[in-house]
Length: 532
Image (cartoon, rainbow, N blue to C red; front, side, top):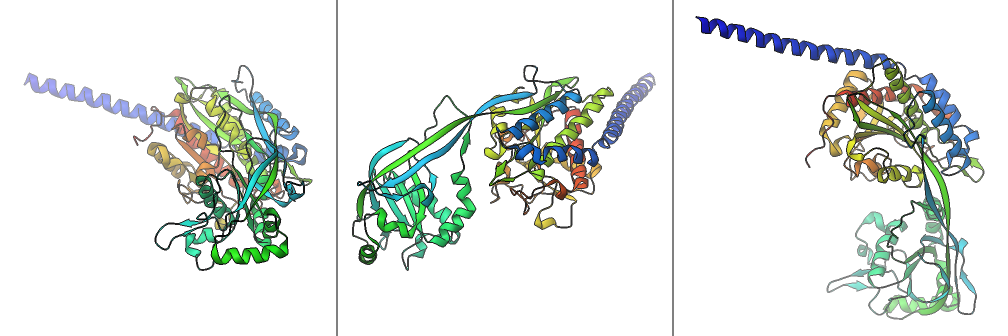
């Protein structure tokens, strides 16, 4: 009898303990939910419009990396972080300063041995320049036909009768008549860009020092319109003490009418020679030329802008919230203000910082710390976030996740008239736990915003997973989410202006991001990576 009574008492105490623990946990959850809902309202479209109207104004000259407008934007952002009471985490500064190399092709031309210019810089697109300067350096220039090869009994080789080792090969775009399948990919048969890639690789394996491709004028013009600016514009990089080993290999594109002179023929004589070559593919067409190539390297100083909000009992762990505040500046006298790209993300970060700063002021600080980081040099190759990931102010091992925002103020063509969506990219790549938290948060706090996973694929041909700043965290195994609304006709155009931004849409997406960040920083356990 006594034993039974004791068991009942023990059971009652155990039940009371479990019930009390559950009730306390429920109260904590309800309190967090109430707080979260309260601070969401401080993310306001009117504030967003105010900030974006400044940052994307003509006064800021398109925020080109290293230029006056970018520096003005950095000051504006740092001042805002200071107003909000955020800590300046870089030795008492809001700026993480660093230097970039801006490398451009200062001069390029090809001359005959007598000094006649056969190809000047304005007649050619240098896709890959020589890495070392060439001053009056002599090269054998040899015709390599279509620059193709196929093994087998009925094989074909443009290199069968010639030796291109240490020479510059001149290659025609396309395929010989009836040999279209030498380029197995139908898309590549139509693409100058794709053909240049694999034909160059083959030439390199044969020992060539470079390739000059020639194509029809219409194809050259189209290539120039689509890619010319990329290859003609300076290349940006972070200086490294360790010199990057790159092959000293020339790759360039010109037009068919330059082919005869490149190989030392008059137009009239070339027609006869080419006709003979086209029949037998054995005639060796070779000449000598001099190459002048000079690179110019300019040092550019720039800065990321960082604001830090310290957490409480888990303050050594942190989440990093990012957007890029640079854009592409002034081109041909037109200011590219980049209101959506990425003025929208930059403005969202300011609103997130304000909401979390108010929570801290109300003594509702998050458990984990938060780093609000606006990076520079994104348009030059994700350079600001790359610099931070290699020179972190806070240890990467303590960084639990990165939420990155890039272009959330517009709609793409697939969602015309439907602003209630956001592309989610990267959430499933490293952490199922983060993905599930994102899904649950959206259902509770942003039920009207559809999470679209169209581009959440490493193999997506657009490669969006690799094209914004979250990638420099993901490559260090830090779970990420990239918030994005897709491209539109004003992407990288001078028409990307504030008056086209959907601020109500921006507000809803930013509130979703706030709720997601809130749940990450206030959960008991840090977000875990998947085992694989």
